[in-house]
Length: 150
Image 1 (tube, rainbow, N blue to C red):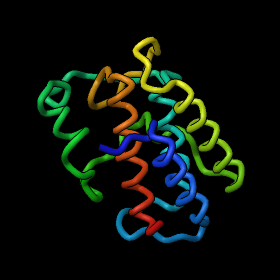
Image 2: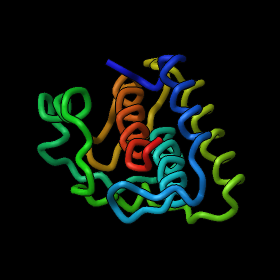
Image 3: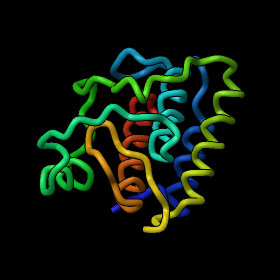
Image 4: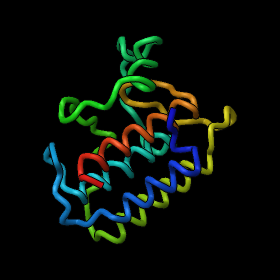
């Protein structure tokens, strides 16, 4: 089961992101490459607890449905609306946006899967463990990089 906390997976994600350009077109969806980079950066801010989240418990919060969505099923293509917490940052300078993503990723990875870390609340799944955040961060990032063909 891939997780962003695996150093080889994190290195692969970084390498794929480095191949992205502001002109890379999506295979599906309406996001631009710049919007996607900001969206992924916002996801790190949520995971790190830096963004207040409007969370309402739903069936997705509870095991086994949450487990199924985090660990088993692929991320749906263009079927799930993006929560406002993952749309905070507007694209600006491409290089600055990439640096912001790298900074968020670095801070996320420094937390590791430690139970001692206070992780942010996911707007759909609610409170998650470090292990769950690591898996979800990989699934989410991989989904969007695949969306842009990198």
